[in-house]
Each structure stands twice: as structure tokens, then as C-alpha cells.
Image 1 (tube, protein in one colour):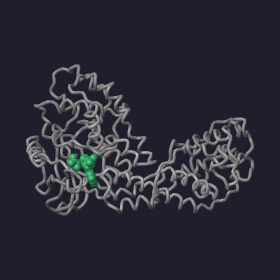
Image 2: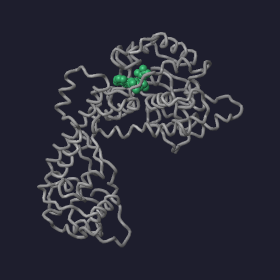
Image 3: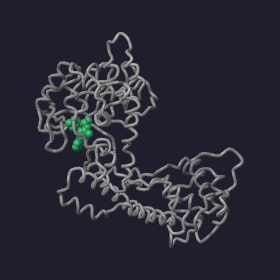
Image 4: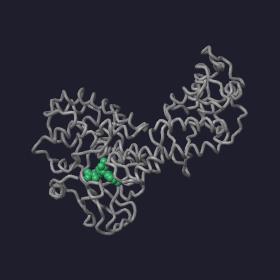
Length: 474
Ligand SMILES: C[S@@+](CC[C@H](N)C(=O)[O-])C[C@H]1O[C@@H](n2cnc3c(N)ncnc32)[C@H](O)[C@@H]1O
């Protein structure tokens, strides 16, 4: 917890907001929520009905490329270089530059942004190892970001260039910035979503501007407790209630339906309310390599696939649009099963006998889910998921015991929650796979039809002659 002038900074920021023309409802307050680990947050001090104004922020108070360079008669060399960067790097550059200016218009706002962050970028190797086999570790992208910093930011000549500071600013952008439509451009419904993934070097829509919106970014989020939304107007941004909010309640934005692994990576916190969105990833290449070994599926009477047989199946999976580098398992809900259709379809193709594969190649789309969910697809999935479970150093039960002791350091406790959530998803997926009862008739079991092209790297199905049909599930 910061023991500095937290309250003084909040008050200075509030005065600055008033000076900038920010209008606050008398029924809201910016408060200190550090005792519950949430930094600052906005609470209702009076009752709000749905669709009431909570506050509005004029475009001139927003921090982005247009407001920082507003009014300059010509484009300086620095502005030219910054405008040519990817949006997140450009915003990082201008925040670094504004932060060192004594006279920055945004100084009272920049002063309330956090100094210490818990996003995964700032975790030590020992702390990251507590995430065990979670695939989130490979998504942090710290060294990639550093290459961008040294290639794009260092040459700008901003004083005190320092990689740690670049990481802090880039991470703040990841968890605080909004994509907004530029003035006088069409308002995109989604443009108020907070903390969209950092835009890389691919600027598809030039009318969208990555921006810091003071006060709008002081709203915390807690999964489905979302009760406010930012609306973009041409002259200002309005935060409005989207349901009744009673006095004393916190006002929450929506950061999206993120699994706790991504919440931790991008926002540096986890909360039980997001457990519903947890996922566990299956990496396709790792899974497919099992089908070429003799040992992986012992007891299932499956002979290994040759490279050629595997390639044919992957080719068909690609044609049908169901091939992916990885698949997310999730908790089953009314709208989705735990095991996605695409993963089921890939396994079905991998397990299909050569004759049926050829027939499918010439047919129109894949069978329905109930046909894909054959008994052997279910058995193979159980093995694949159990192998994935073994990649974690501890069991779900051991993690539960660890958490129940309640005295783990903050980051370790968050890591245990993430890995425990993934193990719970794996269990749910195993449970679902054991219910598969579809017919194994077309599956290559007991050596049936599985020797075509074996060991010769030869295509096991003929190349189609006419144009290929592209479909999905029938
Ligand atoms: C957009 S900011 C919200 C304002 C922030 N609380 C502050 O004091 O600057 C997002 C950050 O707030 C914190 N946060 C948001 N929702 C939270 C929650 N439900 N629990 C804990 N921290 C939360 C996280 O640190 C996150 O990265």
C-alpha cells in the first residue's frame, strides 16, 4: 500500500478535473479502496437510475496524439516520428514525454497513475514459476516489447530512457487506455471498451485513437458486476449507469469476459468472480504429436499415424476452418460446451479411418457434434487432458489446501488461483469427454484401414480434383 500523499493527489486530481471542464454527478465520489486491494475507485454516494450521467469528460482533457500535439503550427521532427509508431508505442512515447515535463497539462492526472504494478511483466522468474503449466506465461511478451522500446523509443531522444519505465507506461496503457473514435468520425459501439488488447503495428482503422481518459479509467471491474458504460460523443465522453445503482455501491466498468490468467497478465489482479471464464489451453502440435507415437494411447487399440496420414487430416481440418494452433477448454455453460466443436472435429478427423476420411473429403461439411463425439474421441480426449494435468506440479486438491491456509504472499496467491482455475477446467472437460457415446464405426480402430501410406510419408487420401468445398458442421 502506498503510504504517500494518496489523498492529496486525489484532491489535486479532482480540482484539475473541474478546471478541465469535467462534470461530476453530485452522487459519485472517487475513493480510496486500497484496503480491499483496488487502489482508487468510483462509488455511488446517492442512488442512480439506469442511464443517468455519472460524469462527462471533454475531449480536450483526454491524453492522446491529437490533444498533445494540438495547436502546434507545424509538425516537429518528434511529432512526425511519434505519429509513425504503432499506437501503443506512440502513446507510451507521449506519456513518457509528458511525465518529465514540469508544465504538463496532465501532470495531476499522471501523478495518480500507479507506480507499482502487478501485471505479469513485473513478476520475477520465481513468481512466474508458480503459474506452473499455465500457457499465459508464453503470452507476456516482455522481450518482444523491449525490442520495440529500444528500436522505436530510444532513438526519439526522450531523456532518461529507461526500459523499466517504458514497461510501466506500456502496462498502464494496457490496463487503462481506451480505443476511441476520432472527433467527427462514426461512433463505434465497442469503442468505449476498456483496455482492449494493445494494438500492434497493424493500424487497420485510422479513425480509432488509443487514448487515456482521465477519471473514466478510475473505474474498477468485477466480471458481471458491471453497472456503467462509457459513451462517446463528438465533444465529450459520458460515463452513464446501465442499471440502477444504490448509494454505497461501487461503480464498475466492463473489462470483458476474461479468464483469470489474462486478467492477471493484463490488469495485475484476479477475482473469484472471473472463475467462470477460466480456460485451459491444449496446444495442437503437442496433441498431434501423440498420435505418431506408440505409447500415448495404450489400451485404445490405435496404431500410430504416419506423417502423411496426419498431414492429410490437418489439411482437411484447415479446409473446414476448424484447425487452430491451440484450443481453449472452458467451463460448460448454456451457450458452450467445455470442449469446443473445433477440437472435437479435429480429433474426429485424426481418428477417422482412411476410407471415411476420403468420403468426407468429397462431401459437404463435417458431421454434427453428436456424431463427432464418438466414444473413442472421448477416450482420446481424456488421455490428452490427463497428460495436460500432469504438466502442473501440484494437483487441484493441493492448490485448494494451499489457498485455504490463507497466508500466501499476494502474487503467489494470485498464481495459485490461476493454475487452480485451469485444473478445474481440465476436470470439467474430462467429465464431459467421458459422456461421449457416438458410434466408433468410422474410427480407425484395431488396425482397420490404417496402413495406407504408413511409414512412407505418402498421402493417404487422393488429392481432390475439383474445387474444394469449404464448410463447417452439417
Ligand atoms: C482502469 S484501472 C482502475 C483504477 C485503479 N483502481 C487505480 O487506482 O488507478 C485498472 C486497474 O485497477 C485495478 N483493479 C480494477 N478492478 C479491480 C478489482 N476488481 N480488484 C482489484 N483490483 C482491481 C487493477 O490494478 C487494474 O489494473
